[in-house]
Length: 383
Image (tube, rainbow, N blue to C red; front, side, top):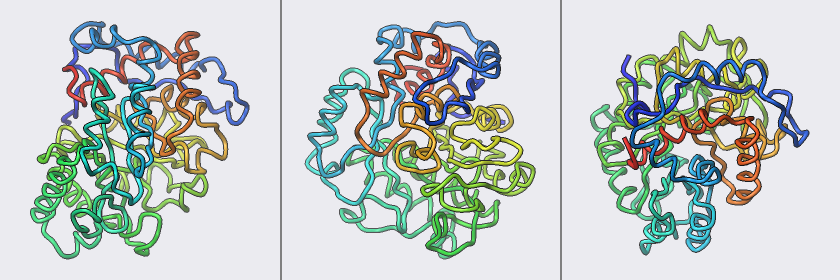
């Protein structure tokens, strides 16, 4: 199966095995030493020798700068100056713009954010899916929901629509779109996934999602398929609680089908992991904090591109049990490349936590280098 965004393009840096479990760390404010599972996966991740262009870039960063490059932090869409200050002060690798205000998409505001980033560009992400989740509709008009697209348009028409939307996003400085949704459901339109899903049929959903992703990519915007391993039939809304999916064996024959052949999506496609408890896989943990979930994606579905988490700072599936700094560390230990949170605060304490974990070996340099290689390659810095 074709691999996406091959980290080996940087000739670099170490493996794809996830590390860390961290399940006993909930709510205590302390991070335990690596579990045997973490130690084993960290040791077996070394499949390449350090070197190459990405390694040179990474060596030029301090430990704190390396950690910062892995973070995607939400910014206030009404306050371009605050976004500039955040990027300038903390050198975060990515920002996320949610909500409906459009100040960051006008008057070249995102150009000033990029200027503040210095030598390494910042990725600029939105979640512009269409329907009830879109970000620039007030500027350029709305696009239909995924369900409406699949019911009224051909895949080629969806591809053309997504290319036009991608061009509109790119012209305003957006580089990543957290779309399309590949979750499967025909449930009520206003459900947590609802009409954000193209279809309950795996083949139909995959065909339309691939078309939408291809249009974005052709416009220079990196698509992100979500929410691995499948939110469509989960027991509730992970914004409100940790929700459970059907067992893994059942997901394999239905919800995971859109991930079976990742070559149908563009090479720059990324994957978002949801806060989903999967019987037979995650042992009561959110998938976003479960090493087993990342191993499933990397090893069984042969994916080697950038993997990011769903929002770690505003969804109770995570926040009921973990502080933000704990969740970010656990996500990286478990195999995420980019922990995401939508609220703009707490960057300093998170970086303090990660820097300390790197210093004492709780977060191995191999794991950091592996994630950085993917992130920097995706941003065109090396590779």
